[in-house]
Image 1 (cartoon, rainbow, N blue to C red):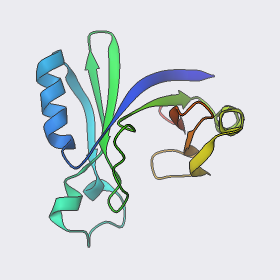
Image 2: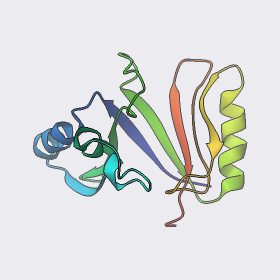
Image 3: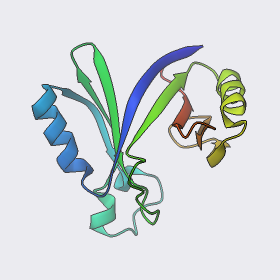
Image 4: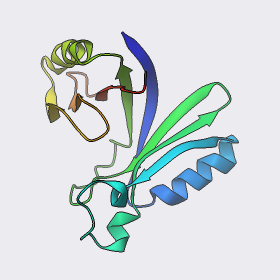
Length: 139
């Protein structure tokens, strides 16, 4: 079952600034903010990479927004600044929806365990919409 759907904004190294901007402009509250420095095994990364936003969640009124910087080393693609993040309550449903959305599309990241989710993947569907699918273990 889907537990939540978020618009997801991707920044080009200015995620910290964007969080502050949307916090002010939208009157949003920062629910959480993780940096690439918070990732396990990232102690040897330069400070400029450590401070990039891995994931930020903001709440404005009844609405939620997620935001991150482009993964270090990956190119920033203009036009890909907005994707849709969908959270599921179990890995089986995550996989089922992932398989359906990838038909005729392009896989960005295969569905796999991450340190924040037992099942996470990214793809662009056949209509050019980028999706981030994740099992939410907090539910």
